Each structure stands twice: as structure tokens, then as C-alpha cells.
Image 1 (cartoon, rainbow, N blue to C red):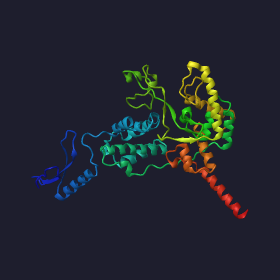
Image 2: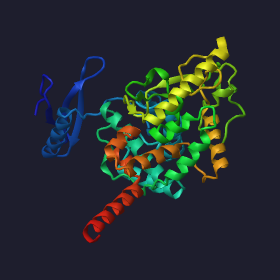
Image 3: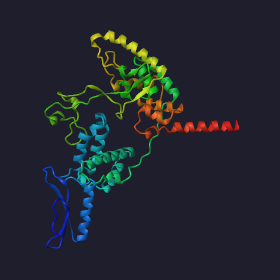
Image 4: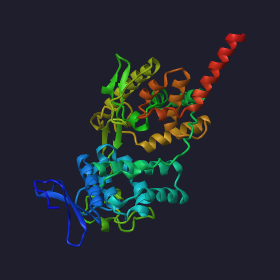
Length: 412
């Protein structure tokens, strides 16, 4: 059969009896036609291959030509250029990169990305679980691989997202054991004596994350409508400003450092970054939360006390418009914030917990008051209702109370 012109597919037999098929799937970077070759021993077999390739072309699933990156090369590119478009730097460095570098790349990093198979992922998840990675972390690694391959599919680096072809590794969601109402009241009674005591009232009443509470600004507190817009404050990570990172980091690497590690920038004499910046809350959505009247009164008193401190500091005051700040207006360091929480715990005898547990307590309190779970999700800024549903013990308590009331109504 002669070759077809004008970009149409062609099938022909050579002198040795082998059948060949050519399919035009697009245009190369230099403007020339991108034609792909298939061959088989029979016309029927090669025709089947040609039609399959035409189907891939028509559906936009033809893999790009050129050398394909390994899984390691692509995942590092994904972490450096794609993930930052939707995730914060702190999340990348504390969550994404450690799992990718420490667990994924050492096991499947050498495989070419377009040759990655479902069985490779099966073996990966089984191995890291045996090596000690928690079930939830294995699931998170799977979700990261799945998102990375989704981007690779869009960029025509792979023809299929193999992570879509297997079930996500399962894990048991840990039930949240929040501080109860009595513990919250005891904590707040002690916190009232602190300079920024209202900061803890905000945590228990509104369920703000630490960075959100410390990032509160007066311009976003609407006293008339009794509500506030949520922001968060984050410290920009240090970056190397030196000319030779290898020399700069010599002697500072630890066991978890990967090859060609460029971390430890805080020790760099020419370091960049390290300042504070305001960002939208986790999830990137604009979020307004109502302020209960008792808390509103505390914030009014907080504003009055801070005005006095501002006058006392004079030109030394760093006017960042923060609701909770140091005596000179600077942001409160999260570690100092944590230390104050621990100090209050010791003073009250409340069981060991973290500032984030105030957020759990807020969710529990809202649910126990009968607030609809979707409203609670909105107030707390949970991306998924599944996160809010972790407070199963609250639902169980409410269910028991409801059944008790029904029994009393029936039998007195």
C-alpha cells in the first residue's frame, strides 16, 4: 500500500513482509509534522495499532517526543515550579519535599516517568510501610504522586496517570480528643492575666490556626458588623545569597539531607529572606468569621491597651497593624506563642496539648451547641467536610442526647 499524503495515516508492507503504519499526531517545535511509526507482522495487527494511536491523538493523549525525565527529575521540577502555584513555601518544605525526597525518590526515582507502572507504586507503598512510614503518610505520598502525574499528563509527558488506576492506601483517621468546655474556661481564666490574653480567646472562640491568630490585623476587624476577615502571617524562609552553596553548607548536613542539599540557608552570611509576610489563609479562599459579643469587647480593650503601647514606643513602633504584637509592634514569634501556651497549661494543670488544640476545642464546642456541621466547616476554613467529620465523638454525644430526649418524651 502506498504512503498517504497530506498528513493522513498510511499503512504499507516492506520487501521483508513486515507491515508499517505512520500516523501524523501533531506538529513538532520546528514546525515539521510529528509522525509516529508502528509496525507488526500482519496488516490487521498494524491497522489496530494505527487506529489506537489515532484515537490517542484525537483525544489529546499522545505523549510528547523527546527524552522523558525520570521520576526523580520530574518530581523535583514539580516541587520547584508547579506546587508553589497552589501551596505555601512552608507546606512544601515541611510536608511535600520531605516525603518526596526521603520516601518516593529513593525507591522509584530512577524509573523514566513514562515507564512508571501501577506495580511500581504497589511495591513502593508496601516497602515504605514496612520501613516505618505511617499509614496516613503513605496515603499522603500517594496523593502527591497522583497530583504530580496529573500535571505530567497535562503536559503530555505520560499517556496515563497510573496513580489513578489503584486505590489510595487506607489509614485509620485519628479521632480528635479536644479540650473540653471546663478545660477551655480554666485556660482562658489564666490567659486573662497575659498581655495578649485575647489572643487565646480568639483561638477558642473562632478556631483560628496559629498563623491566622497571630496574623490578625485591625483593618480587617469590622467592629460594626462584628466580624473579621482571616489572614495569616508567615515568615519567609531564608535562601542562600552566597555564590557557592556547597562551601556554605559544608559541615552542616545531617542524615536526612538529600544529595546536593541547598538547605541551611539561615547560616548563610549573605542570606536572603527571613522577613514576615501576610498571606491568604490555608485554602486560598477569602474567609470572614463572625465575632461573638464577649470577644468583641475583649478586642476593643485590646485595641485601647495597644494604643497606649504605641505611644510609649514612639518611633520604635513597627506599625504592621497587628492585633497581637510585641511591645514594639513586631510580629509574635510562633515559638514564643507556643511557650506561652505551655506556661498556661502548667499553671492550670491542664493535660498536655498544643495551641492547635484550641482549634479542636472550638470545633467541638460549636458542634455541641447544635451548629450545622457545614457551618462549622465554613467557620474553621476546612477544605473538606471530611476533616470536620473527624469530631465523631461530638456526633455520638449529640446522638445519645437526642435519643435520651426521645425516650423522655415517650416514657417520661
